[in-house]
Amino acid sequence: MTNDTIAAISTPLGEGGIAVIRVSGDGAVAAVESVFHGKSRLSQVATHTVHYGWIQDPATETRIDEVLVTVMRAPRSFTMEDVVEVSCHGGFISVKKVLDLLLEHDVRLAEPGEFTKRAYLNGRIDLSQAEAVIDLIRAKSDRAYKVAMKQSEGSLSKQIKALRHDLVELMAHIEVNIDYPEHDVEEMTNAFIKEKCTLAMDRIGQLLNTAQQGKILREGIVTAIIGKPNVGKSSLLNTLAQENRAIVTDIPGTTRDVIEEFVNVNGIPLKLLDTAGIRETSDIVEQIGVEKSRSALADADLILLVFNGAEELQPDEIALMDQLKDKQTIVIVNKLDLPQQLEMEQLTSRFPAERVVRMSLLEQQGIIDLEKAIASIFFSGQVESSDLTYVSNVRHISLLKKSNSSLKEAYQATEAFVPIDMVQIDIRNAWEFLGEIIGDSVGDSLIDQIFSQFCLGK
Image (cartoon, rainbow, N blue to C red; front, side, top):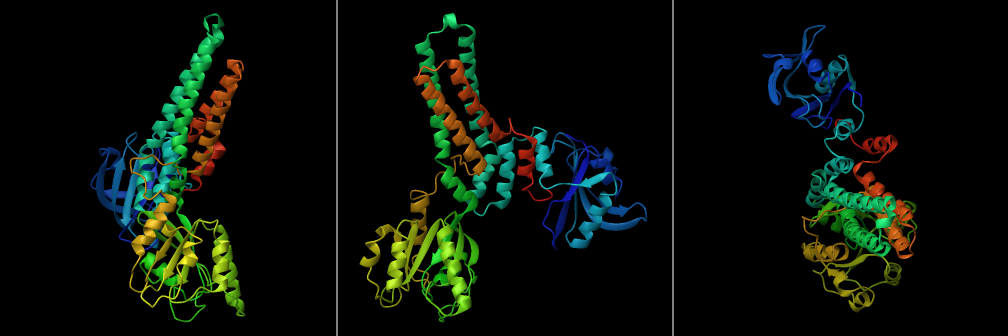
């Protein structure tokens, strides 16, 4: 681990009340002190204190900005290094001038995620906790934020470490029997190995059972709004987004392209795709929109199929229902406020009754029923307790599956009375896969890849 000093803007670029520039490393205090003018020298102040003053160019003695400087000395900082944060006025010019001035004093620009990477390399957090930081930043709902917060606090790490501890004890038991075979009772050893492997597989299985829900909370459900023109697709998007995101008119074919919007429905993040109405048309631009709609339909996790309840079903709508029978689909019968012409039996004969929702988007009726229908598909009727540790990271899910597979192979080898030194190889593989989750056994290239996904300044 290098001890050079890094700096980056930690707040979003643009106009704002304040902007924060973070500096970390052995020379952080000295670097900021060389351009800071206040009542006290930063090298002499106590840790975790805030100081008022000015950033000034020492070469020209020109004042750059009025600032507050926070000093946090190692190891009581996020990176476990000396950290200084400069709070200056928000805006492109003032922030850039302060940062450029700091970069002239033995400070280099931080790489994406380098502050969090240093926190990991210095032992403040493990790799799964570091990955939770980016989930906190990208959370699109309160529930997703709570899941990421629990992981950043180490909820998953604790379970992984407990599993690895049990597997270490199992491997130690096997080593004793290998070294002192005269004291080994083969049947007892095999029974012990199978018992421990079963317990470990059960605990991994419990974590994997949360994977689907965890990924949904982390990434959102890709949801395509499908239907003929002028049935209320754009009105549904606007209602769920609680803003006029899409143009709504009585003219069929208004939506020509796929409109994307993230919304939060009862704590469940949806990536909504409002599509062009699917119909035969001679309009070249609308034809392109229809093709995009069909592509969105194929890629979606959830389909919201919208019909106009004031009209009879058309043959192409019936064909569309038959096409979607094997996908996760909720049927929405819109315009409940008008005299109804649609025969509900045509819908309920193809889809379960609980997945057919009647709505009037004009009068805001049926929103709660739609929320319940979505929860029933992806969360068995409700989002799980906030106390549950969710596994949402694709890398973690893959490693848990590999670990589980190795334990299953160890169990089967034991049943086949394979020599226990061979069984131990599978158990060690399972232990190492779990170690990759928390960063105990990963290469530099993987670490670099993970932290490259972070934003600058984090």
